[in-house]
Amino acid sequence: MEHTPETHSKEVDIYRDTWVRFLGYANEVGEAFRALVPVSAVWASYAVATAYVSADALDKGRKAAAAHAEDHGKVTRVAVAVVDTFVWQALASVAIPGFTINRVCAASLFLLGKTTRWPLPVRKWTTTAIGLSTIPFIIKPIDRSVDFLLDSSLRKLYGEGEKHE
Figure: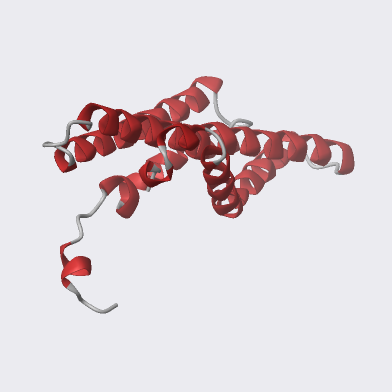
């Protein structure tokens, strides 16, 4: 990568550019392990993912406030940054992937029960492996779908230039 003033001085977004972003996948991991762990552990994974989503939204609001400190529309810009980030992250990082992994695992456990004679613990571990291996394949399609959904709905209310980055 060529070092220009823009690339060299670009601020690191801890919610997108560091290991912290993996906290957004906590609920997918929780759903993959649902067959093996107490349901309270799955709910805890949702709490971690929701905390990540909330922290990212607040961070984007803080950055919008700093970027528009002198603007008359500062409050609106901050609200748009927080709402857009929160809605995007809630859908793309929590709700849709959680539901998807839950259904993949439920279907896998059901089908393994109908088509194999494997003992239940083996079916449960296989289901967890299937769920975990599904995660990398659903991320980009879900992200693109949520972008399309928000571009076609919520973002029309506040204009194209304010979307989640």
